[in-house]
Image (cartoon, rainbow, N blue to C red; front, side, top):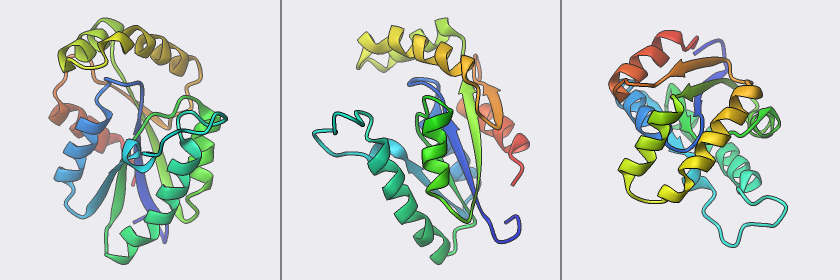
Length: 167
Protein backbone atom coordinates (compact mmCIF):
# COMPACT_ATOMS: atom_id res chain seq x y z
CA UNK A 1 0.00 0.00 0.00
CA UNK A 2 1.33 3.41 -0.97
CA UNK A 3 1.71 5.07 2.41
CA UNK A 4 -1.55 4.87 4.29
CA UNK A 5 -3.71 5.26 1.20
CA UNK A 6 -5.82 2.25 0.23
CA UNK A 7 -5.21 1.25 -3.43
CA UNK A 8 -8.33 1.14 -5.59
CA UNK A 9 -8.16 0.11 -9.25
CA UNK A 10 -11.29 1.21 -11.11
CA UNK A 11 -11.87 -0.42 -14.49
CA UNK A 12 -14.16 1.74 -16.60
CA UNK A 13 -15.41 1.84 -20.15
CA UNK A 14 -18.64 1.18 -22.03
CA UNK A 15 -20.78 -1.90 -21.66
CA UNK A 16 -19.13 -4.89 -23.35
CA UNK A 17 -15.52 -3.74 -23.06
CA UNK A 18 -14.68 -6.38 -20.42
CA UNK A 19 -14.75 -4.45 -17.13
CA UNK A 20 -16.32 -7.18 -15.00
CA UNK A 21 -14.48 -10.08 -16.63
CA UNK A 22 -11.08 -8.38 -16.38
CA UNK A 23 -11.84 -7.06 -12.88
CA UNK A 24 -12.64 -10.55 -11.63
CA UNK A 25 -9.51 -11.92 -13.32
CA UNK A 26 -7.33 -9.30 -11.60
CA UNK A 27 -9.02 -10.08 -8.29
CA UNK A 28 -8.22 -13.79 -8.68
CA UNK A 29 -4.60 -12.97 -9.56
CA UNK A 30 -4.28 -10.74 -6.46
CA UNK A 31 -5.81 -12.82 -3.65
CA UNK A 32 -5.40 -10.04 -1.07
CA UNK A 33 -7.77 -7.72 -2.92
CA UNK A 34 -11.51 -7.23 -2.77
CA UNK A 35 -13.76 -6.93 -5.79
CA UNK A 36 -16.97 -5.04 -6.42
CA UNK A 37 -19.01 -4.28 -9.53
CA UNK A 38 -20.85 -0.97 -9.25
CA UNK A 39 -23.89 -2.48 -10.97
CA UNK A 40 -24.45 -4.41 -7.75
CA UNK A 41 -24.15 -1.25 -5.64
CA UNK A 42 -26.94 0.60 -7.40
CA UNK A 43 -29.74 -1.91 -7.57
CA UNK A 44 -32.67 0.26 -6.62
CA UNK A 45 -35.83 0.92 -8.52
CA UNK A 46 -37.09 3.23 -9.63
CA UNK A 47 -33.99 5.28 -10.24
CA UNK A 48 -34.42 8.96 -9.43
CA UNK A 49 -35.15 11.10 -12.48
CA UNK A 50 -32.15 13.35 -11.75
CA UNK A 51 -29.80 10.33 -11.47
CA UNK A 52 -31.03 7.60 -13.86
CA UNK A 53 -27.77 5.62 -13.60
CA UNK A 54 -27.97 5.66 -9.77
CA UNK A 55 -24.47 7.14 -9.46
CA UNK A 56 -25.36 8.89 -6.20
CA UNK A 57 -26.41 5.69 -4.44
CA UNK A 58 -23.53 3.70 -5.98
CA UNK A 59 -20.98 6.26 -4.74
CA UNK A 60 -22.52 6.27 -1.25
CA UNK A 61 -22.56 2.47 -1.08
CA UNK A 62 -18.97 2.19 -2.29
CA UNK A 63 -17.85 4.78 0.26
CA UNK A 64 -19.65 2.85 3.01
CA UNK A 65 -18.01 -0.43 2.00
CA UNK A 66 -14.43 0.78 1.64
CA UNK A 67 -13.62 0.84 5.39
CA UNK A 68 -14.86 -2.76 5.69
CA UNK A 69 -12.37 -3.94 3.08
CA UNK A 70 -9.58 -2.30 5.07
CA UNK A 71 -10.85 -3.69 8.38
CA UNK A 72 -10.81 -7.28 7.14
CA UNK A 73 -7.24 -6.87 5.86
CA UNK A 74 -7.74 -6.47 2.14
CA UNK A 75 -4.69 -4.96 0.44
CA UNK A 76 -6.70 -3.13 -2.20
CA UNK A 77 -9.96 -3.07 -4.08
CA UNK A 78 -10.77 -3.79 -7.71
CA UNK A 79 -13.87 -1.94 -8.94
CA UNK A 80 -15.59 -2.36 -12.28
CA UNK A 81 -18.16 0.13 -13.42
CA UNK A 82 -19.11 2.61 -16.09
CA UNK A 83 -17.90 6.17 -15.60
CA UNK A 84 -19.30 8.21 -18.46
CA UNK A 85 -17.18 11.32 -17.93
CA UNK A 86 -14.76 13.14 -15.64
CA UNK A 87 -17.52 14.74 -13.54
CA UNK A 88 -19.01 11.35 -12.67
CA UNK A 89 -15.56 9.95 -11.94
CA UNK A 90 -14.95 12.84 -9.51
CA UNK A 91 -18.26 12.12 -7.77
CA UNK A 92 -16.99 8.66 -6.90
CA UNK A 93 -13.37 9.47 -6.13
CA UNK A 94 -14.30 12.39 -3.86
CA UNK A 95 -16.46 9.97 -1.86
CA UNK A 96 -13.40 7.79 -1.15
CA UNK A 97 -11.10 9.74 1.18
CA UNK A 98 -8.01 7.78 2.09
CA UNK A 99 -8.10 5.84 -1.18
CA UNK A 100 -5.48 6.01 -3.91
CA UNK A 101 -7.79 5.57 -6.89
CA UNK A 102 -6.40 4.67 -10.30
CA UNK A 103 -8.91 4.92 -13.14
CA UNK A 104 -8.16 2.44 -15.91
CA UNK A 105 -10.13 2.94 -19.12
CA UNK A 106 -10.61 -0.26 -21.09
CA UNK A 107 -11.03 0.26 -24.82
CA UNK A 108 -11.96 -1.99 -27.73
CA UNK A 109 -12.48 -1.40 -31.45
CA UNK A 110 -16.09 -0.61 -32.35
CA UNK A 111 -16.53 -3.74 -34.48
CA UNK A 112 -15.37 -6.00 -31.64
CA UNK A 113 -17.51 -4.12 -29.11
CA UNK A 114 -20.60 -4.79 -31.24
CA UNK A 115 -19.60 -8.45 -31.63
CA UNK A 116 -19.07 -8.90 -27.88
CA UNK A 117 -22.47 -7.45 -27.06
CA UNK A 118 -24.18 -9.62 -29.68
CA UNK A 119 -22.35 -12.75 -28.44
CA UNK A 120 -23.69 -12.12 -24.92
CA UNK A 121 -27.14 -12.58 -26.39
CA UNK A 122 -28.96 -10.08 -24.17
CA UNK A 123 -29.54 -6.36 -24.56
CA UNK A 124 -28.15 -6.62 -28.07
CA UNK A 125 -30.23 -3.57 -29.03
CA UNK A 126 -27.80 -1.50 -26.94
CA UNK A 127 -24.74 -2.30 -29.10
CA UNK A 128 -24.84 0.93 -31.09
CA UNK A 129 -25.41 2.97 -27.93
CA UNK A 130 -22.31 1.34 -26.41
CA UNK A 131 -20.27 2.28 -29.49
CA UNK A 132 -21.46 5.90 -29.22
CA UNK A 133 -20.72 5.90 -25.48
CA UNK A 134 -17.19 4.62 -26.15
CA UNK A 135 -16.60 7.43 -28.65
CA UNK A 136 -17.81 10.00 -26.12
CA UNK A 137 -15.51 8.54 -23.46
CA UNK A 138 -12.60 8.84 -25.89
CA UNK A 139 -13.33 12.56 -26.27
CA UNK A 140 -13.42 13.07 -22.46
CA UNK A 141 -10.42 10.89 -21.63
CA UNK A 142 -10.10 11.30 -17.87
CA UNK A 143 -8.51 7.95 -16.99
CA UNK A 144 -5.08 7.56 -15.43
CA UNK A 145 -4.24 4.73 -17.81
CA UNK A 146 -5.83 3.08 -20.85
CA UNK A 147 -5.62 -0.50 -22.07
CA UNK A 148 -6.93 -1.71 -25.42
CA UNK A 149 -8.70 -5.06 -25.04
CA UNK A 150 -9.19 -5.67 -28.77
CA UNK A 151 -8.38 -9.27 -29.62
CA UNK A 152 -7.06 -10.06 -26.14
CA UNK A 153 -8.21 -12.57 -23.56
CA UNK A 154 -9.21 -11.42 -20.07
CA UNK A 155 -5.99 -12.96 -18.72
CA UNK A 156 -3.87 -10.95 -21.19
CA UNK A 157 -5.72 -7.71 -20.42
CA UNK A 158 -5.40 -8.32 -16.68
CA UNK A 159 -1.64 -8.79 -17.11
CA UNK A 160 -1.35 -5.50 -19.03
CA UNK A 161 -3.40 -3.62 -16.44
CA UNK A 162 -1.36 -5.03 -13.55
CA UNK A 163 1.89 -4.09 -15.30
CA UNK A 164 0.69 -0.48 -15.59
CA UNK A 165 -1.10 -0.07 -12.23
CA UNK A 166 1.13 2.10 -10.00
CA UNK A 167 0.00 0.71 -6.66
